[in-house]
Amino acid sequence: MRFRTPSTLLFGRGRLADLPEILAELGVERPLVVTDPGVAATGVPERLLADLGGAGAGLWDGVAPDPTDEHAERCRDRIAAGGHRSVIALGGGSVIDVAKVAAVLATHGGKAADYFGFDRVRRPGLPLVAVPTTPGSGAEVSSHAVLASVASRRKEVIAGLHLLPRAAVVDPVLTLTLPPAQTTWSALDGFIHAIEAFLARRATPLTDTFARLAAPAIARALPRVLAEGADLAAREELALGCLYSGLAMANANAGAIHALGYPLTSRYRIPHGLANALVAAAALERIAPGRPERCNELAGLLTDGDASPGPTPLAARVRQLLAACGVGDRLPGWGVHEKDLPELAAAALHFQSVLANTPVALGRDDLLAIYRAAWA
Image 1 (tube, one colour):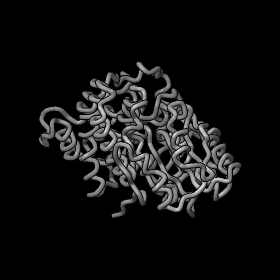
Image 2 (cartoon, helix red, strand yellow):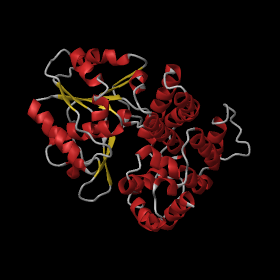
Image 3 (tube, helix red, strand yellow):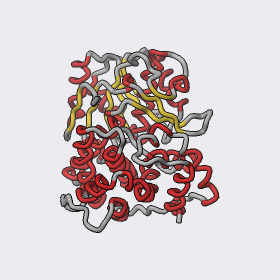
């Protein structure tokens, strides 16, 4: 059994203030703070730069939603132009993924596409500290990054030990400025991570422990956060649940739900977490026969802590959470056309690493059937 985490992991309200101390402990110098325009507009990056007290720190806010390999290369160029020796990723999963790849490119050379796949990064990149501003992506504790390829027009994965951040700082206060829709989509991503990690072929006792903690915490906290955005106790529970799910997913890997979600993001620009949520229930109905006891256990944990499954299967529990968050689980409501479903199924088949981690074998016809169930 192998379990990877950043060497330093901080969690709690106000822990962003400890970042300069963490950088000093790690011997990190001349950091480039990487973020996106939305986070930059909150003023947090500028305050962070002030806390760092100069020291050669810089700021780059060029990350866009659904970033491409070209975003990572632009970030690499900004690192080189400023003579930076480390990277701080301040943002959601897209920001952290771009920063991971840019930190590798800064020391390895070449283009991002040169490293698509698994274990093609043979030595460390620049030291990276991840500071998530959204719950759920898990990017701050994972050793992979997902970018859209400009050439292939599909999602590509870069994965390996050397993409793991040196440290992660999870401060629930940073999520206060996140709009409700983005809060919902990112937290649902974390919820799906917990489910898929628990059902994964690569699941271990450690990932099971974190998944069991994560799913009910997210299901409890997310509706509370949406009902009262200033409820810091709820945000803290949500952030902790999502941290647990990230640790589970980072070590057990995702499954077929992610394979089905990626093409929806690439083709329709549906946010990643939302795309996963839209197909999750339909996928679970097809996957459940492969791990019925685990699906029943998780369904029970999502029912006020009662571990007995009762009459409602896991897929129904997922639909209940989506309804509580105001998210429908039918694809036509998000602009997906029925005529595109075969093409989407073919695209989902590309993600063999996560399909192979799913407890039942799914071919193109199975993936198409799941899309049709989510569309009908």
